[in-house]
Length: 271
Length: 242
Image (cartoon, rainbow over all chains, first blue to last red):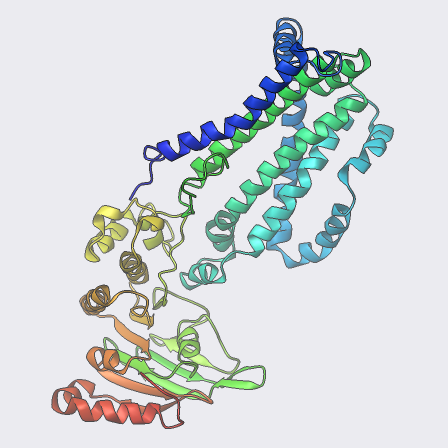
């Protein structure tokens, strides 16, 4: 009756091993091409070089950039996501609020969010404020839209059970609508977090003296593709790590869900 | 005093009149079966009796007081599907109508014991089979101590063996609480095996075409004749009935 992780292994392990094959082979080929002199190291640094650059950065000021970026993402994501949860819950639960607010958000959604960057810089200068605002903006929309549609798509029959059992309006919201919308909310939070990382890079590319995005610019300006690649690898790692954290929270919170967990499809990362 | 006394105005959805004007009085502690073809408005009627729907001009009195909206302490409903809330434990589902669930923990647990699921109190609905989930739904419907239990074909979605056990359990639990039961079904044999009183509905618009108060006696003496009479009443407008 209880689904355990214990009997996942074999097929899953094989799948994981299979998933590593392509990246590992690619890295080896690059390494060989550069070592054989077929590709110039100045345009494509070999993986070993990227690793040693990363180690070198780690011994100097990588932590400074890391902390700056992580703090920005955390701050911006927290602000954007909590605003989205509040507005989304209001719009999802209240028809008047929906008529008042939703058309505006639907319209704003049509604007590619990166188009806001110049305006943010004009309005808020080049310190932390515009970066946080941009990241918050990026995180807001996915969270808002998935929460609203999550509340809208709650099974009518479950709501009726609440009504039939004498729950008042507040009781229906608290005990039926919000818990039922939680899975959608988590999907939105994860998408919002991915957007937050994207907007972090956009913000840091334009104007920053610290942060992983700054490392990207720095690497380009000083002609160091190994630094650019080291920054890319770091960003990928941070993105995956933060998603893992959120997924773990999701898994714990939504343990009641009766979901299909695809057998023999390892590496999709969703369970 | 009647357990429930309903004067129901016609219920229309758009052009169609689903339910004609109806009067229905139910006696305390009795088991009533309401048989009718699909689409005859029996579920609509049940929703009205349970306070989930109120056609303008209708009045439903439960225990002598008007029913304005659902009041599970007087009239409780069990649906065709268990409709358990998946994020609540079995016990929390049972005590859904409780004002303070923590104080009523013992009561929820004793009801779970009654339906044979005491060990499953802290399980989640996804861990239950269909029959078990429907037993939890029964415990939930009985939790507020209703004096009338409305059953909207709750046995139709479970397998044959569970169905017999579930039906027996409903009757036993309702009898132990002196709770009147109104069962909606389209299965004539189920109705005959269940009821003290038998109501037959016909469609376009939904109306009663037969009302036998003494089903037990009739079934004992002439079951087959009664069965034929009900089937004839059901098929009077050509709708095939099981």
